[in-house]
Amino acid sequence: MGRTWRRRRSRKKNSSISTALNHDSMIVNLTRWMTRHNWNNETKLKLSHFKNTGRGVTCDRSLMIEDTLIEVPYALMITLDSLEGVGEVVVTPNGEKLTIHDLLSLFLVIERHKGESSNWKYYLDSLPDCLPHLPWLATSSEIDLFPNTLRETILNRRENFELSWKRSKESINPRWKCECCQTVGHRVITLNSFIWAYVMVNTRAVYVDPNVVRELSSSKWGNILSDEPSMALCPFLDMFNHSNNARTSATLVKSDGKWVYKLITLSPSKRHEEIFISYGTHDNIKLLCEYGFFIPHQGLDCISWTLSDTLEATKMKLNERQYKFLKTRKLDDSLYIDCNGLSFNLKAALFVILNPFISDWCSCVFGNFPSGCSSQEMQELCRKLLAWKANKLLGELQRMENYGSQRSETFRNLLNYQNYLLVLVDKMCDKYNV
Image 1 (cartoon, rainbow, N blue to C red):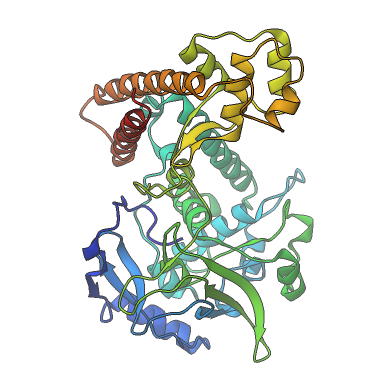
Image 2: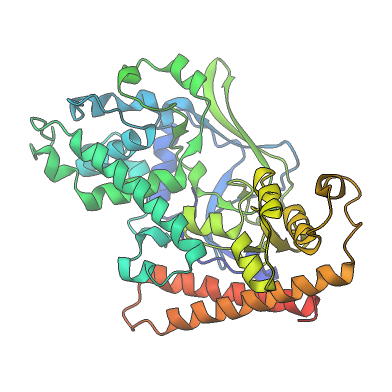
């Protein structure tokens, strides 16, 4: 959703300075098309270009908590019910099912190919041609240089895409031809066109109640859909940018007898300033991998370690009983330090590491936690962890910076993120006197 690929910077006072886009032909055509299909812009939302976030949404009045931001008619959304045209394109001779993400991606490819003859032309024109800087879109040689902590997540994202492309490609009806130009299916649905569509769905789709969607749908996709129809594309709503400080509520509701997708703000905003929504409570790793951007100093940043990292950094060892205790109670995961200090699991892990001979760790960890471990000992281990992480990040950063001059923008974006992480660790090192 939103212009999510822009490199975000910390919000400054001049971030509200904007240039109105009222006369942009793409926006004029989009809003006119939506109005013809019963969209009422009751909040008088406008699109503007902001210095720090690029294209975003504003309005001429201040918004209060529980004000409605936007109501988009269900008929204007691309949902399961919109996919009837894809039925001629898709066949599944081997009985393999497709996900709602697959089907929405195929729909976008086909409608985009139709160009002027597509009923969704004005919405498609509002979608960017350029892709966000998603790490999984980097080259294989670039991914090889990414930090181990990120690489696994990135490779999982790439595998998810490759499986989606495999399912979709194998489902194309060999007899189908485009109605507007008679081009055969495999020349319409290409790898490049599918990458674009898959990313648009992944970064812009909203959640919709699948029970409501099924109730409203006349579609016959039940036999081919492998998951719930809980994703949909929503014109104009995907223009809102994300902020972790924003709070919103979204749902499908009936309004004057018709279904609409209603977005309510749970946080106030001043007139003429950019209106943000929340894509979810995401840390920067999630934002980077899902949307291609990160937000410095957003408050959800943390520095994390694996259990093996922790042992290596502190030069400590676990006996079998310690290891089993941490593993069975899942205290070997979510080991991090954030702006609030040590995570519960990190405190517990360090406590167990420092106290190998206590017979009842459970009572200490889940009861009177501070007993058996001095704050000085804990602080010393924290200093070792942070020093180890700083050296690790510096090594990863130097390796990435030594990469040749032919760096993709995605690679540069991740390089910026690594630099930011190093600054974050340095600040935490200062806090713990490393």
